Length: 443
Image (cartoon, rainbow, N blue to C red; front, side, top):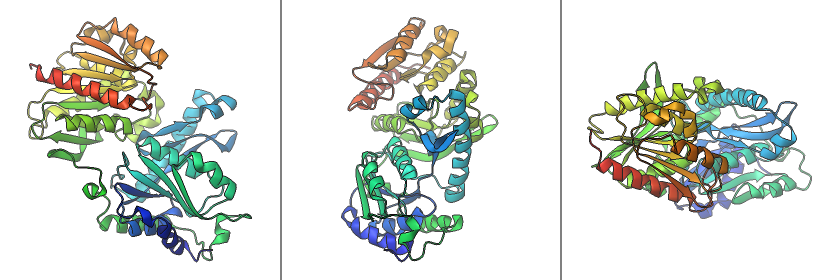
């Protein structure tokens, strides 16, 4: 059916021509074989190209059965039904994830080098492979892309097994598959030349795509522009480590909000990025950063070490205070999610830390322990109305706070605020809390 992957990519691009000129399109190739196909699609559409590196989390005694998947930026998707049926323990899951997380990081660095991944939040993302047999990797890729904030997910392949394509329709908003032969056999059977794609070829194609100028042209892609001012990728000095981050300070900013992510997340969290964009639009600076290095994340104990995370946050806060040109004398606030909220409260209780305001989204303030009573910064606790366990923990923690505080419940919201309108409510509550308290803040 296809001469080679180049031919397949050109023919797939023809089917996707309707997206030429459409706003906010990103093309992601599954390495390695999907990248040559994706390259042709991206070039035809004039869209940025990147790799989508995912790792399936396989059940230890049956690795082909996935209980979840992980992606870059701390994205983690778990199938609770498989976990329950396989009777997996937390220790077994952690062991598998640590191994796969290390391999994911290695592959991402190998393919992309020092270039940051393309931002997916609010965009139409086309996931491309050279063919689909069982569909496990394609399904995981679609789940990871959606978790990274994609507005619309299109799965595009030259050839696929008919039943597998049908089964994948719940994972993507649209599937484009040129050929679905009844007797499928294997992907390579439908190519005259199915020579294995090498890592070096993937690296070269990504380099060529980046040099075409599409990769970071977000204004033309329709993502919108940042408010005038500073918006740059940074390396935050935090003691003996350097942490990657995104630092945005609009002109005439009234304060800077430091985002403290929860377990299994990072600076690419689509929910935190959504809230950060809302704060930027209101004239507030933001810093999204990774609390831990990739090496530190391998030890899952670090993810729940509130003392370690709180101390790290204090170092990051000192770094923000030193950015006199970008944020001269601006008050600093914390936006914490899950365990990150505990770290924010822990750091805020430290003597000499003059943080101006704190917002907790679906947080675990109880993990800050006896430090709760020492927090001086005005604190807003936001919890979903259907997040019953966390809601009870927040009510109990609120009783221990001695600072100005408020508990806001988002009706119908669950822990991740994935319901329509829930995250928008969180962003509005956070924006109001920070702007009100930054205005009245006195150093």
